[in-house]
Amino acid sequence: MDFTGDAITSQGVVERRFEVGGDGGPVPGLLWTSEGAAGSRPLVLIGHGGTSHKRSPYVLTMARRLVRHADYAVAAIDAPHHGDRADALDASALPDGRAFRELVAAGADRMTGDWHATLKELQQLDDVGDGPLGYWGLSMGTMLGLPLVAATPAIQCAVLGLMGTFTDQDPWTIAAANLTCPVLFLLQTDDELVPVERGIALFRAIGSPDRRLHAHPGRHIAVPREEMDASEGFFAQHF
Amino acid sequence: MDFTGDAITSQGVVERRFEVGGDGGPVPGLLWTSEGAAGSRPLVLIGHGGTSHKRSPYVLTMARRLVRHADYAVAAIDAPHHGDRADALDASALPDGRAFRELVAAGADRMTGDWHATLKELQQLDDVGDGPLGYWGLSMGTMLGLPLVAATPAIQCAVLGLMGTFTDQDPWTIAAANLTCPVLFLLQTDDELVPVERGIALFRAIGSPDRRLHAHPGRHIAVPREEMDASEGFFAQHF
Image 1: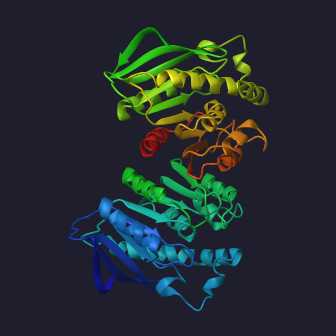
Image 2: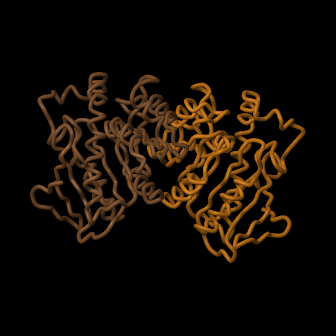
Image 3: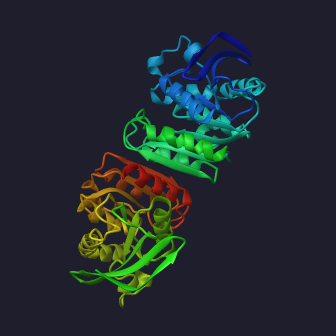
């Protein structure tokens, strides 16, 4: 694992940029820890949404609050085709339904491998270690998160949502059935991308007996701050 | 308002039985306050479910925890045909769909009047006063609670749920549209009495812009303790 560039410290939170060797090439990521952190602590992996990246404002907000309020370590990596891994792909076509879903599904195995490679490196750091592990990712962060969580028994709990089933055999419905850890699942009842009925269907498909759904009015991106609080409480309760 | 019988005190919570004169006859109720309570405080009204009554175990649990944890006053009254107001009605037929709904709808105006009469008396007590006011009621407690909350602007927030729409013009859907206060709405995704789609439809029909839905797997009566915690937090946040 190589740390690249200078660490940024702001209000007690240290942000370090790293690169890990993945099977499909270097994986660019960010690690947030508290200033002066020493010793093993819980680690939350954040999966960003479609057309977003590892340092999008809501990722940064979630990461910084988990460090400041709970002194966890938090990491985010760019998904294929996003952030520092952006390619010639026409980003404007991404949210366009089926083609986007197929693209994401095609990259899921690679992303799981990239997370595993990243995790292995992070857990060797003195100020991260192998403490409790959680995942937080909505929308594309759930499309890529469901296969990751299903394939990673060390993940003790996950916040997912803003995603629905499309067929009984789509990769997310299948992965959801293999989940066993506690889940907080978030939906928006006026979501223009995910009809609420499909979201409920995905929630019901989750194999974990310990799961809860929180839904609010409003569009896809309007998840209220209340659910950032709920996410924080959920991690605190399950770590 | 007449207090009847002796007050019961247990672990710092005083339970007093009362009777208030209602338009349709005496209204039997219970009031819970902390031992030695003096002065105005928040008041939560609890509406019990169908075939249940003002001292059913979950009503008692909710009331006692709100007194013990938050030092609120809490009151519950028997709905028509229930508890001390039980009549020759065949209770075993109550949960049976349409006939039950018609019976509850027919009693809604009376129940709202009974609550208003009760409220007027309670707010004159030195250890209740006219502090912040909330409502908590699921299932039939929502069927009777929606019209009450819609007709009672003093109610600042309400926990509702385990109920759905039946038609666009059913009395609950109409009352829901008239709500303006913050709402926490609870559903069970395996509810054998309320299909989750109908529950979501009722949540969406609520007029209050500030509303959130929490849902869990399990049957109608299996609302987990987590939502008792959430209810308590919801009241604390909105009082």
